[in-house]
Structures are given as C-alpha cells and as structure tokens.
Image (spheres, rainbow, N blue to C red):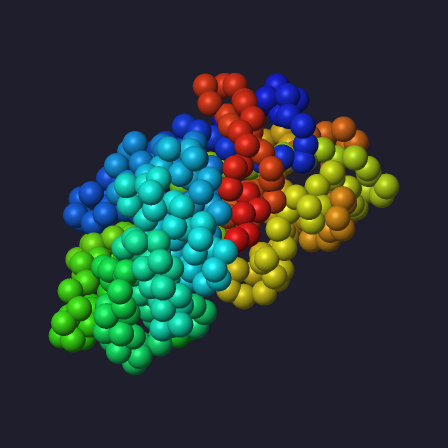
Length: 379
C-alpha cells in the first residue's frame, strides 16, 4: 500500500485505510480466473459490507453477490445490486417478511434452507403472498455448522421440491480448507474433496427427480481450484477482495495483494518496553486466538515500522482493553513516541471491517471516507 506520512496525518484514528487500486486488481484477477474456468463468480460481501465495492465486483463481471443476512441484502439492494443470494437459513417470520418485500425489488433473490421446518415456513409465506421463492439447499461437507448432513440431503431435497411456492434450483456449501473433517494447507486436496462431495449429492438429488441447476461452493483459499475442477458452476469467495494475513498464510494471496491497513495513534509511552495506541477491542477483532495453531498469530494485528512500513517483528499488539491497545516490544524498546501514527496489518479482515462504521478509501494519492453500510446488520 502506497502510504505516506502526509496521508496518515489526514486521518482520524483509529481507522482502516483501503487501497482502491489494489482492490481493483484483486477483483479483476479473481474474475478473470473464474471466467477462464467457465464458472460464475458470486462474491460474498461479508468482507467489505459496502455497496461501493459490491458494484465494483458486479461491473467487473460477477454474476451476483452473496450475503449472510436479509438486512445485508436490503442494504445491497438499496445500493443498486439486483441479484442476491442470502446464503444462510432464513428462519424466523420477521426475516421471511423482509425477504418477501425484497423479491419485488430484485431481478433475482435466492434464499437458503437446511431443514424441512425452515422450508415449510418459507412455503407457507410464499403461498400467502402469491409468490414463488427460489431456494438452495445447504449441505454440510465437513464444517459442522449449518447445512443438512450428506446422508440426509437427497431426501430433504426431494421433500423441499414438493412444497408449494418454492423452486429448489441448487445446492451450496461452505467447506474451506478441510479434508476429511480436518484442516489442511493443500488447496487442491480440499477443493477436490468438496467437488466430489457436491457432485455425488447432486447426482443423488437428480436421480430422485429434482432437477437442480446450480452447484455453488468455494471460499477464497479453494475457490479457483474448485472452479477449475469443473464440477461446480458457481464460486463464492469473499476475502480475496482485500486479503489479509490469513489468506497470505493459507497461500491464497501474496503480501503485496493485501489492500487494507489499520492506522492508530500512539497516545502513551509509560515505559520503554510498551506503548499504548488509541485502538482497543472496539477497533481490533479478537476472533483469532494468539500463539495458537494453525495461525500462531503473535498479536491481534501485525505492527508495521512507522518509517519503513515493513512489519516490525519485535512489536506485539497482544493485550487490549476497550479503548487501549498495548504494544509490547520483545527487544525491550518499542522505539515509539507519543503522537506517532502507526500502521498495522489485519489478521482477519472481514471481522476488522465489521468493527468500523466507516473506512478511508485511498485512491490516486487522496483519501475519502466511505460508510460501511452493512456493518452490524444482525437480522
């Protein structure tokens, strides 16, 4: 990222800065690779949570976008996106009512189910509203969160397909870097297992007379390997748009592909071996356990040297309170001073963005504020 002391001086910290030109390169690279594999790209907006970036993805050729919540989909629809998949079981009458309103506003809205009870609630609401709802069935391929178990998927698909008001058009999964239920670093191995599991269940569903069209999978580490195998027709990566330390460690991105940095101000240097910055748990996410495999991260973000902007390996942001981020030096001297603005690299950028009401966009040497419209959309 091409930062300068002049640019940092313009910021109100703590904050996040996004290099828009690098974002465009990341979007173009993923879209080009998906197109070459003849696979649709439907990126997940969980990483950026902003209509500005979603439109950028759509303009580059994305088939549509993916959201996790109906409230996120509402934000994206208001921002001009018209083909949205809510990849999360839509359970709860309040959510369903809001989705029914969205149907008339969009070119295409796809909803998710992973249980007969959830599908029946959607069916009843669709019939009462005189609508047909497009749905996909979520399959658990090893992550063990939402998703119908593999052995029950075909039977559930058959039952869902018979419900009035619903059109079951596909299946989807989120598997990540798993092989036989355990974490792996081999993208190809994880993707190949995902492709084979999805193909097997799709064949079984079709043998039961349910003519599903779409098979959707993939995350940033596995998406392109999965697309190239040719057994899915849609991938849904999210983090690739910005990248972070996680995607670099997973081998899915290079350091130079990371488009995001934190900026924070040193507010106190009580002792030579530690300094305090103006960002604590309200700024930096704590969803990545420190010094624990597989990531073994030494801090909640990686601290960069304030002069060279290279990672300062002796500095650790490994203690926080709500308003205090404590940076410790393993060498005994932080070298930091009160008033300095420093930069840090996110470990997990999705949760980092979700801590911010707005971010700074860096483009052509200038910065401007951008509201994170879908931040905190819980429903």
